[in-house]
Length: 129
Image (cartoon, rainbow, N blue to C red; front, side, top):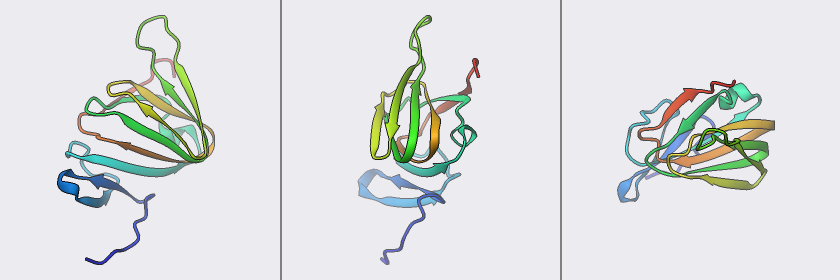
């Protein structure tokens, strides 16, 4: 099998059972089994959908800031609590617990990488946005 470069900004990497890895289009079915690695460059909050929450019920998620600076925001688990904000700078990452609603805000234009098992993931508009 030939080894070829993969444009991480144009596709996502799927880590499958049995040790197989494949490159898929960014629009590939998120209900497929396996872990998914996505990398992207974001210039504005719209690029990271900062006005939406997302949750991954099947697995934790690693969110990493490769270049720039971002805020990883965790939705309060109970009424009356504040959002948790984790600052991530270039070369840092955080692990979002399974089933925890979260979103990203940009501090500066950034390159971001995320790894999770997307099956069953949900997105909802942020009411306070």
